[in-house]
Length: 193
Image (cartoon, rainbow, N blue to C red; front, side):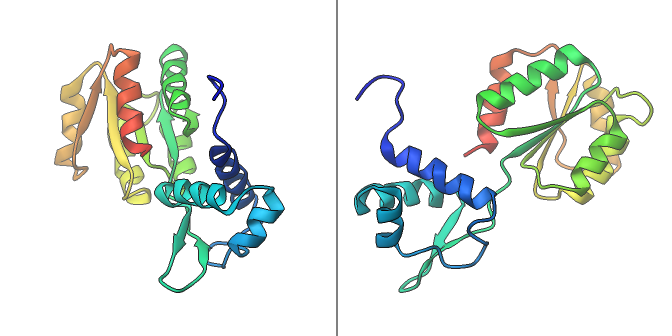
């Protein structure tokens, strides 16, 4: 195999994922039969099954015993970054994209809450020292709107982030500034599996 070239089954998984994201395959509806999909995509049944296994591990498809393969509501593969410093925000975005997750980046609490109202996120990276409303008070709304998301405060003042626990935001996780890019990549990759 040529270095840097994806195996065919990963290409097929990406094609099916894109179709699902475009709404060609509605959630909880049966996908076309495997022989039909294999013919349509020009691959063997074995290659198609490898692609479906990838999507199953990612949470995109589910199979029932004796039933059809169905599209599942996908797991959140998005990260919300709430950081007002453009340089730090760019670093956090870079680390997120390195892990092949979708990213939404905003610079204040109001925009963060609005984003959380309109989409699911796996990870919330929240700066404590935001202009206007601080990140700790915004975390109350973010936790209410995104109860399944991992919330991590990004701050040079960890003691301010610890105040979130007294407000009922738990667990309190902190990524201290300054941070290494590799630390952020490890953190993001932990939610991307």
